[in-house]
Image (cartoon, rainbow over all chains, first blue to last red; front, side):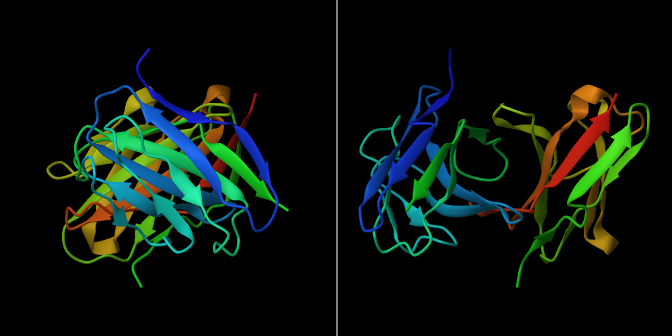
Amino acid sequence: DGGITQSPKYLFRKEGQNVTLSCEQNLNHDAMYWYRQDPGQGLRLIYYSQIVNDFQKGDIAEGYSVSREKKESFPLTVTSAQKNPTAFYLCASSIAPGAVYEQYFGPGTRLTVT
Amino acid sequence: AQSVSQHNHHVILSEAASLELGCNYSYGGTVNLFWYVQYPGQHLQLLLKYFSGDPLVKGIKGFEAEFIKSKFSFNLRKPSVQWSDTAEYFCAVNANNNNDMRFGAGTRLTVKP
């Protein structure tokens, strides 16, 4: 089955710890994205990557970091500098960068930091 | 600031009722417009999109949306909803063909059988 996998589905961390969220796709897509979803705020773009070894900041990149060493993988690290990390995180990919291409979404990871 | 507004947070309808969900945006220039849907327990998926041409676009499952440039709107419609349409609906806008997609806050639709 082709698609996007995110693991784990639920993640719990103590304040002050960095945590890395996994996103893997087997769709052979060039572009990948990370969004954060909060109640009543829709999805907000954290980072996106147009191609391997390239990534750009979105609207709310502060306190987050990413890497894109392989085409199929785009992990997101939530650092201790992120002031309000508890949220639902969605990863997406598209065949190429640009709005003309549909974004395909993963199932999401719900992160709770206490 | 550039934004996407969905004014209806939660809509409750009975089966067979007509649906219209509002979406307004504040971007100038060229826009690409999308509606995504998230059914309970499922991934977010594309419902329909508008890039150019006929401002009335048809999507999956009988949904359609109309782009009205003068009103900066892209409202989603369905003439007769079904219980299976219960989901959360997100409007999204991409301006000037960049890589940045802006989403609205979402509208939760509940259809009573």
